[in-house]
Length: 80
Image (cartoon, rainbow, N blue to C red; front, side):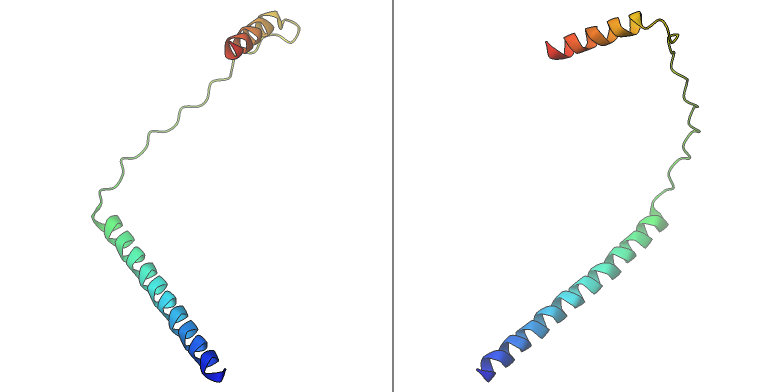
């Protein structure tokens, strides 16, 4: 029983050690690749300033007939 337990613990230590070494290597490789890309890749062109959003046309509060008609037509078109 003692031999089986020690073999299990040895296998666990080797397995966890292998995973730790692999993940550490993966982190350093990823950081190195990121440094190479930022060093040699051309910078992105500066983005144009976004245009201010236009205010949507809102019908007067008391006159919603046109809005209701448009919404009814959209629902009817969606369902058909």
